[in-house]
Image (cartoon, rainbow over all chains, first blue to last red; front, side, top):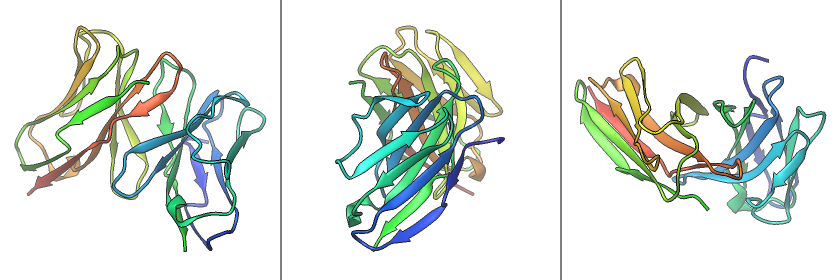
Length: 113
Length: 110
């Protein structure tokens, strides 16, 4: 596609439920990043993929968070047993490489009630 | 880990005025990115700087990376309400991780 696509754009879930957030990067982009942006906070790095592997998972807040990427393309961020503090905008970005700009999706706004 | 500090945290200017936003890194910058974000939207890529002393312009926005590659500035000339938003600087470290400053909230009053 022309840009990075994220779905759903909005998600409201009950505390304790699991959620899956999807990111479709730009075709051919090998690097894929997930970030979280909470109200009034900066962008918090979650995880980085190069191809299908994740060299850096250091930003995942807890073991309730996991992510995978298949076929060097689509990535899914899964949050298990959601908590209210998980409420945030989750942003995905992709890039063809380190010397190129990173293109961001419009994000998924997650609200845990 | 690399830390980016942006200043000011927020800025209110009258339409037509010039303004500058700064981004200072705790380590040498291998690549410095400027993004703009409007409330509830994703990040819009503005510019990328890599070489010390590099300067790039797009419309009324100019960004510079200093010679030592530890500080960048973003300058807007003759600001307009359309320039309002959050400006974020991001940097790629040696581990290829893109990290961001906390952003500068710009308000332009008509």
